[in-house]
Length: 245
Image (cartoon, rainbow, N blue to C red):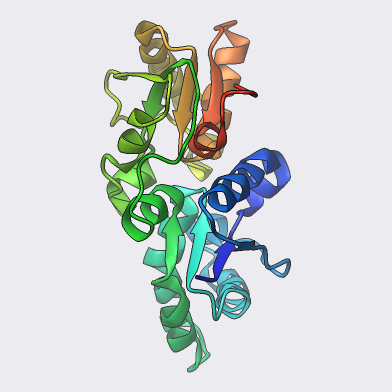
């Protein structure tokens, strides 16, 4: 199987260790991972802000760069949702008759990491060890657009030494929301503070999620309030073998 990693610009610039964890994990499971260096942004920010015309070259580039792979794996539920749900919309509105077919040929093979592990590879026990108490925050895009359900929890449940504690009101937004956090900063912070109050109530040592955007928001609030809870992407835990935990 030819597997490509779509790291996303957010991870590439701010959390490169997440992409490294994905590669370690998939290689440990016996798969060779390619990293097409021509990849750029998926266009989510521009699309959400209403700049659909500016999305067209990004969507075209994505379809070109990732053509020919059996699977494209990304450690970002929000970017996977953009590609699978909105690239076709951009392509249909573009003045490019070849773009819809090119997008359709690629977007159906794009998987968020937990989807790829559970649905494509058929594994939940990835050989990880992480002896800590963990709370999981399911992000809005993963819940409502990708509908990944309990795949992350099933993977975490198989991690040796890990104790998964329930997060109250886990389906509520953390307040980040990309452009929402910029345009409605006070509301965003208030929502984030509600979320970290729930995190503190769990007694967890680590807050984990499948999107680093939400973790950046919550991690910043936890840090500023002096709460000793670290944030980690799910891929980092699944890639852990205990020595670096």
